[in-house]
Picture 1 (tube, rainbow, N blue to C red):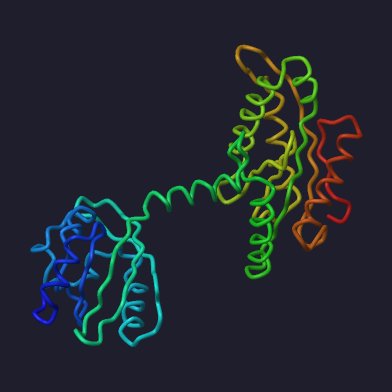
Picture 2 (cartoon, rainbow, N blue to C red):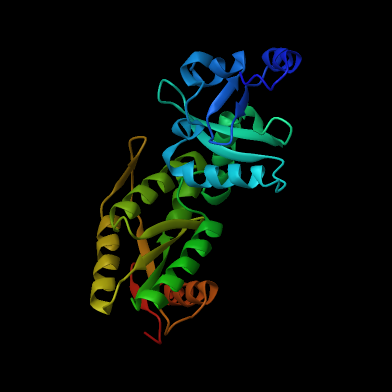
Length: 292
């Protein structure tokens, strides 16, 4: 540890449950507390005199150096987050409380392991944007992705289409076999729909037995219809749920950007109206919005 730091201060740092690090102006470790090894796997003698940045996750290094510089020039940064790499290669999410000591010309920082908290935040964010039953994007995420797709279509001057899909006969499945079978059935439907599109496209569940497909870059009506026919063909095959053979069909409405709607909700509504025309004409049909 740097001689400028008092023995009493070092003793206090050693007693802290959270790791304490002291860095000089060059960003090298001049002191780490005993708790440092417990969190990061490195004993003090392995890091003293070495650059702190070497332990930071590669993608976070630029932002970490920027924050360190801001602390030194006395900008107020009560807390900051980044990712560090444990000695065994595991990535750790770290919340830092850091201060610049003018007297000792060092940065003193305390680390808090927030890896589990970040995992929980990620899970909660995923749950908020995905349908719990099918794990597909829900209405919230679909609207967000469609908005992004519209922006990209404008920038890249590419085409964009959406399909609104309703399952013909799903209510009868629920009525005759119960909601447990119905839920498992929806999961199988979701899987088949996902298999019909590219990785660059999006399949989501709006609710009930209604699904939406976002086709990015779809340029010709014929190519869009080809995807819709592929979906219809999937529904011509029986679904087997718990040994029960189920037969349904699909009504599909298609809308294109920008002629059928220039905002996400308008585009979905146009596809929805086209789908209802398909359904009202007996179902198991594909209808393209009037402006397409």
